[in-house]
Image (cartoon, rainbow, N blue to C red):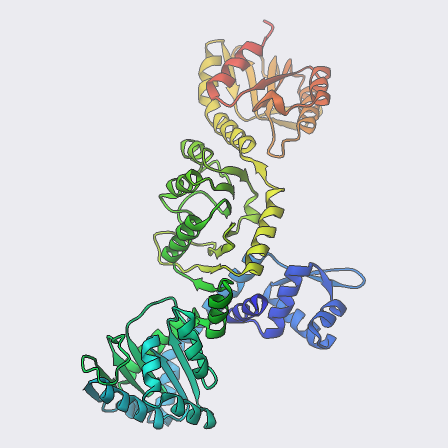
Length: 563
């Protein structure tokens, strides 16, 4: 059931059913050959090949050369954003041609004149009178009926011959959709008879209203429905209309609730066995995302897994820390995975978050989609467009579900990424170190001037080889010759490879005949025995720290320029 829903959703992005099946299979199975895809999809190879070429042109898959040639899916968030951009381009093109097409059509059609019809409104009161109007509407139906009402109203309608009318409509091939709120097994059992002739769904919305839409041409609406099952109830009233605008609005309202409702037999099984009802809800509004996020986390009992792109709006709410604190106070264990960016991470806020959650840093490439899993078997998957700006009304694509298969997939994805992620303590040291390096030129420059030295950060020095060697810092005496005594230093590179940094510094320093060599690192604990021995062998002095003043002071203590 879950896979069918995913296939349907992918098709809303413009993929054909075959293309959606191919993409989903490649996401699950990884790189595959045409033969494997053909066998899995139970279709011929030529059909698979044609669709693969189309998907390659769209940028949805990558080709892996070899024998046999294999194909792999690009990351899901990249694929969705690509399809979304294409759809927006198509819509823009359609909008730009709207006036031209409309003008052309108006010349060959009298559509506009026919659309302007006289609409009618009629008020009716008393249940018997209302039912008589509804039955007349059903009698005149040719194609489709949509009915939203209360369970007690459905039972009362049977006393007016509604079940016989349903059988008659079914024999004519008329589609009947009934939407209601089923509260107990007794009501559901009564409605099972209706289900033989109509599609019945349960909605969590407890609406005390009645809406009957026939062939999308006319609507009867009662704004309030009495729970009494008496046909002689005179307190009810309603109105009938054939206004195209009102009919369209009523149908859109009905369809919105229908999409997020459950089949009656699923609800009946839940009421009889206690087995929960699985639901899936989609949303594209940031406020809905915040609501689902807070409510889902609030229902968690002992475990929450969170993957969030960055710890800032719009990816989290302003009260994010309070939400975590509240869950942690209930004994919920929270694992949080996010991209810790030195430009945006507030170390004070981060310290608060660490009180309530175990945090790890993940590469930004893997944090394109936000997800949540809770031990209540609820999950959220949300994709933010790359250009999302919180103050603009940009749409997102989100999905909430309590489907076990869906939540287990989310958990598996999370745990796979979790073991690749970096401990937040290590990442925070890196961030402090980078911030310290940015402030060092000002602080260290002031200190070395008092020693009669000049600081260059960064520095380029021509070596005896004739090559220009680049260092992260260089110190010289003010009165030294152009190629006089010099102290050079490098910072630990992004990749954290200490050995490579030591070797590189040693070779460059030899070329410029440096008097001393410094390697600046965040903390000595990152060094292994081999790296410490290599530093001694190369006569490289190690300077560690994450505070700019501390680092500058240590450099001053270690340097020793010979007069």
